[in-house]
Image 1 (cartoon, rainbow, N blue to C red):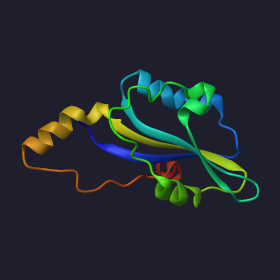
Image 2: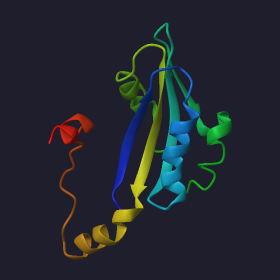
Image 3: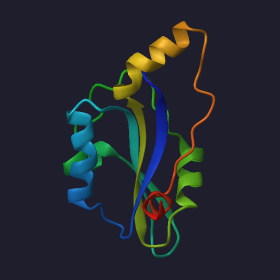
Image 4: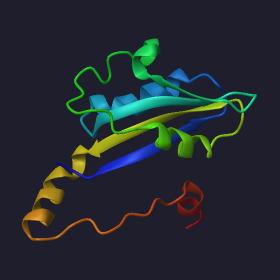
Length: 129
């Protein structure tokens, strides 16, 4: 298994942007990532936090049909993720396996190594260099 990551993709409205969702899911179809778990979190204009399963959205229906384990994203993850959201917005909460890195991860583990850390670099920092 390759490295796995919990990712929060925030959108500025309470509804998902279909084009963005399709682009992210294209990575799954291309075999770059494997979707392990996912939810949609919404923070309403009133500040209420809601969570919904993928099957409640036409564009996401069936993406987790082959989920092999119990859900990994729980209520605490939803609450923490909602703190990142503005009122009147939503987010895709995803647990993905980086399939593209599986061979390297297996080799590192076989050599007694492990992934000791990871840092997400903001696009702004990369563009400035």
